Length: 355
Ligand code: GLV
Ligand code: MG
Figure (cartoon, rainbow, N blue to C red):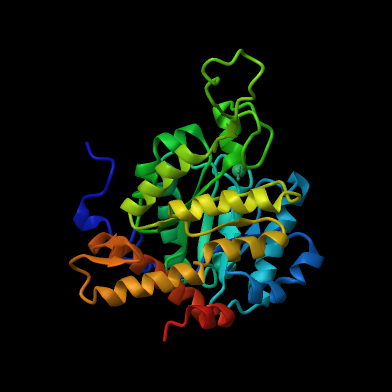
């Protein structure tokens, strides 16, 4: 028995009167998903300014919001969604986990009130496609009842061992899937990793170079190189997402006192195929912007490759390096992203010179 709908039914609405599921995901720049705690009025007051600075504003209702502030956070999110015009900046919400006592009210209050303004619901602690199917059907019913004209997309957090086991099925669970973020803090707990961090590396996780032949132990220092704890998971996530045409993201980096560590984690994710990362602190917005916008030098090279192979076939040499159909396609990925960035950022538009 297949766990999926048959192909011909995959794009059928899940409720009578719900909007048609999207066959292509909207093309949007989402370099940083900026988290705000919506129960804090002072922070809500800064949302108009944030809209101009970030690609996505996300109201966080889940972890980091105290139990006694859950209802205020939900009401605060509705208020900030109603009070602002988001233009082409995304409006997302992270609801509570499906087994929590808060999630049903999150969905049943937010979708009727501001579902027509909401781009994406971030769903935490997704364990398998069944979690996506549950929310998918419920959203279709609510969209139908409240006359919401376009489907609200779902973004899963990959933060349980079971979720990682099922990552491909989650990515392909529904046309409503927008993408996925690595949740390194919950994933560490779920896996019984022996860390106490939110993302990033660990100084003890690494590789020690072999002893120098002939030297006695302890005389010649042996190089120790820290390794990336998240490489394996990010690689699985990127492949699952790319195969299903959805977007992978790095999640949170919790050490705000280590901007360099944050930048390196974000850049590894970018180079491996991720579209963005979370910003939990205002200082991380600039880091994500820098990392997830291609470098002008790389864009210039991509332009030269595409210009040297106008129809994308054959092979040419540029600066001693072979280029062919495959590097042409890589160059195209870079140029498409640069075009998207240029629409939003006049400084980078000038640096990219894509006219
Ligand atoms: C994010 O939610 C995480 O657990 O890392
Ligand atoms: Mg989490």
